[in-house]
Image (cartoon, rainbow, N blue to C red; front, side):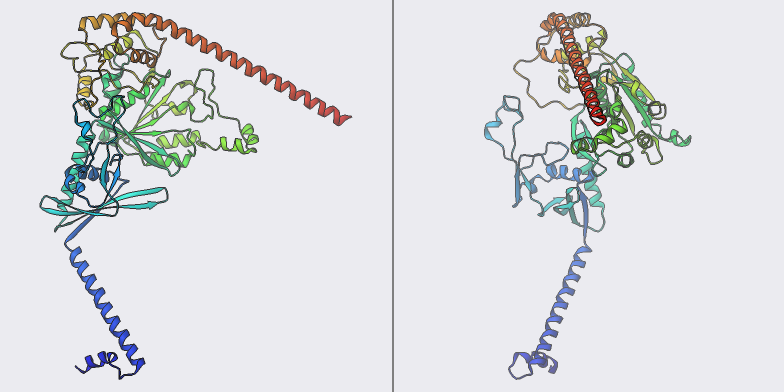
Length: 564
């Protein structure tokens, strides 16, 4: 009792000021220590019941949970008291995620509205999404989950994080949540192929988008080639133990070579969708590409994916020409060293420093990834170094030529469906556009084609008013035969045929009647472009000769002046 009185003595007016100050310090320190101890004890008590899991945007579980929350947790997201207004999708992977807080226009509810406007553009939808650094609570399987979204800043940009806390004795509820979110995500994403691009600045992979899967029936190659490649890929993916038992590196390489616009890239896209693999694209001639960067990228490739090296013949050249007269040879060391004096040339040469040795080591070196399917495309196989295209690095070679009559017939049957029950549900395929190096679907009845077509998602786009006329199977076969007869063998690219059919996608009969005139116009256009190119090259050659003669005259004048 006396001690309490002594502590409270500073409150009275009859005491020593120095002692009172010391007593106040002791009282304040004691109270603060007690407060901190109580808070720490309470937090420890709470943490003993809460389980907290952290998910980073750089990993797949973050996308799974964000997709699941946008569906399963719709009421909680929609009732959020603090939110952002956006017209962008919640997901990075292009999956449509609507929440209960989305704003819908009443005028868009009519039957003819649909997802697309009358002009063909996609309608913008305003969405309400929870803000960052806010905590939301949802109820899941008898447990209350506390969910917080945060953003973490890194050297190369910001990265979102997701924190989920739950009161439970073990982490079984979190495991069930992640697995359920994974199943929901894969169910909605099974019709898409994810594309990743190489980031040479930081030596990592960046997600670039998701593309709709393409059925194998949409690729028209020579008979047996498509089935051979697909069977070889499936056999490789199922032979990991066989490779390990024999000490063979678990890698497989495919070299697709041939003329531009023959369907090399489209085949890879279709294979990725059929096998359920993501595509990782590397541009060997991109700025900042070096031996170390490529080795790091190759080492970080997942075990089951498609690794794509496009235009392999242009990896070590600064030129942009892809014609037959281009040598594809890199600039000489003397010219590059002399040109480096000017700032402009210095910037031009600040590109890829990749060497052939570095490329070879990244493909099958000690640090090279295993379990991936390597696909390389080139328009000029004769320019490749033999060490790059040898077996072990490129095991399977496939030559892509200009369109044959058989291919022309198959492409025509795909663009114009017949009235039969087996083909009534087929419509014109999605294409890479008139300028894309893609082929079109054939009407071949193949089990693999039927399976791949069944796995595709149905398009949400309404049928246009000028829909494709559905003809009988006999008439379509007759028109396809006439169309193929009018196409010259191995002269026009598959992309050119597709471009012509796209322009006439609603006119099957007129398309066949006008194809002969189109072939003549294509030949005339090619001759005109060839002539213009020859004239341009002759002019450039003449200018170069005149410039060289002028430099010689100037040198002679300079020498004569010095001698005089």
